[in-house]
Amino acid sequence: DIKKVKDSRKDFEKISDDLDSALNRNSNVPRTKVQECEEAKNILTSKRSGFAHASLDYVFQINVLHSKKRFDVLETMLSFMHAHSTYFHQGHDLFNEFDPEMKSITGQVDELREKAKQERREMEERHTLVQKKDLSQITSSIHGENGVIEGYLFKKTSKGFKSWVRRWFAIQNNQLIYKKRSGSHNALSIMEEDLRLCTVKPAYDTERRFCFEVLSPTRSHLLQADSDEDCKMWITEITSGISRAFKDAENQELKQEEDDPSPQENKTDETELPTTPKLSKAQIRLQQLFSIPGNDHCCDCGSKDPRWASLNIGITLCIECSGIHRSFGVHLSKVRSITLDAWEPEQLKVMAELGNDIINRIFEKNVDETIATRATAECKRSIRESWIKAKYVQKAFVMKLPGPKTTAGKKIRGWSVKKKLRRSPEKVTGDQSDNDLDVTSGLMEAVMSVSTNNVLNDSDSVI
Image 1 (spheres, rainbow, N blue to C red):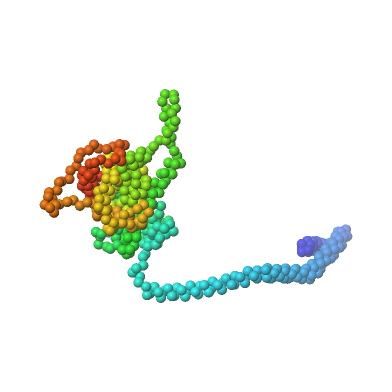
Image 2 (cartoon, one colour):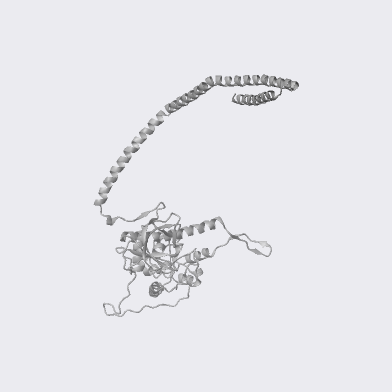
């Protein structure tokens, strides 16, 4: 409608201009020119007629627009009001449907408010208890989700002035890691890549208290706990972590052997013989060591199928006992895996000359369980540790060497060792000869010397 009004206005303005031109021309014609006067008159009459029609049409369109304005605006406003009414009516119905849920949420909010008040009262009571509690007995170490200890320790730096810094330590994936207090979760530093190459022991030669040392083949780390209890806890947990690392590696190797058997085919001329499983070097070594009397059981607790050995003592051990041996340090017991580590021929020869039976006849000659309870396959770690410590460190059960004379004044015959052919691991049997006393007495001094002086040098390391 507005467009029609605009078009009519354009036509009206155009015809108005034409009418003005016709009026000007008609007024300028002289009287003497009768013909021009007649033409100007006719043009003026035509323009007046067009102007009348255009003006009427323009007025008509304006009247139509003004008449529609009266009811169209009111109708639009009425539609707008109906839309608002419908919107709020639907909203009211919707919230009526949500009324049960809103009441339920209101109840939950009230419960949360009461719970928050109760927690606040409990925290205020705990705050009062903390002020009365002896904080000196509180440990700063905790056990993580995987059950392994983690917490803050002081670490002695290896650069600059070798100052002590406080870091958060943990054992993850058989690694000893640490990070700063303000560092992100990803900003982890690895102190030791593989715990299987490490040992841990208390550090008594430092000026600071509660210190322990983590030793690896290439370096050592000096750490300090907040208390003596924390220090012992960390030493125990790291030792257990080392044992778990060895056990995980052993289980992984056994799983690989089960998943990937390697049969060997032997052919003579053109005839095929039945395939036989090919034994690995570790399996051959295991058979050789198990053929030595007593080596098919742990020397300390009697567990079956031991997979570890102490090279400088000449015995086989289970995984639990090997962890305790490892904690004493390589100067007392150098522990190696029978299946995972590489062995030198000389080491096998030493193991062939000794064995669990011979060693136990020396180190368990005079067992006194009032000193330490004998370890078994299912005993606790504390019992196992006490037994092994009394047996090898204190040598509490070894037969004492007699003095130069007896109480009756008779001279005691010195120890004698009869030379015997060296046994190869393949030919060792379980028969005991009548000369075991001579062999045992001679080996007593030899084994004790080996345990103290560590005859096997450090070249027998893990490869």
